[in-house]
Length: 384
Image: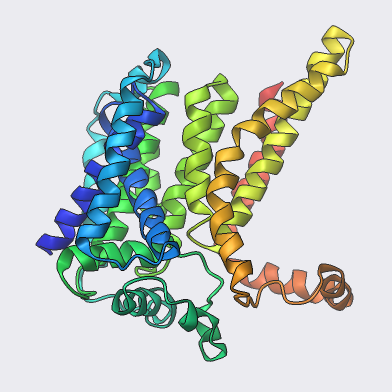
């Protein structure tokens, strides 16, 4: 356990200059939460880059690469201007309800570390890849390309397995006894980000109440799978993009784009989330541009309002691109998009009513979708 905790703290320390390079004024919970997320995401990039360069993974080689990034980020941070808009939410006032959030996350920590990771998908996908890569000293492309290993989803991005490998390198060998702490850290990071951003918009009571709610639903009970990291990076990314759209905050745009880029490297669903956010940004920007064009009597403003937000999402796609290129270069199969989209659509179209009936009967957390539908119906009136 000690080595795992040290590795998690190392990732957080590694991420501090990176977080400050993105936002020089980040402090308190905002800095702590983003620091771990950036440390975890950047460590994935470090191990990925070493594998591409055919450099054997050792604790020394990883430490040298990380130290170079650490120093570069520190230099960039010194030249970054402060952002007064983020200073206030970086140090939110505590509230007694925050104690309940601490107890909730403590209970999750006990659950996540009761035993070595036990999920089947951990044994067959995430943990299996990580252990194979550790024994190889880098990403084992022959393992991923083998047709006998399609059950391990070779097309899945590798942020989570490579984080497992970093913990194993720090531990001096493979052990999955305390890997659950990594999922606790991802959950805490998301809560810290949400607490800091909520403090910008509301009172300490409501900010802490929102954080308590998120502590119950914002962590994955499937410990060992990529969902924990996906929730943390994706959730933080969406919250930052929301702040960026509300406040036209360049710093929030940078945070949001980078977090969504790392989410795209957690699972295929992370890339789907990035596409969904892109569509949402286009819709919001288009509606704002249309309103502005009606006021100004020109359509030029509308196009400009849409182009600027999309340009701000470029870092997300830049982070997602390397794995997509590598996956295509190594022809890693996927069971999600086999064949053409048109053929899949035509095959399923006659069974649309059965698919919808199945979703209605088996949809995960139906109350959540009811709440989303209610929000969609209520939001326009509230906006007016």
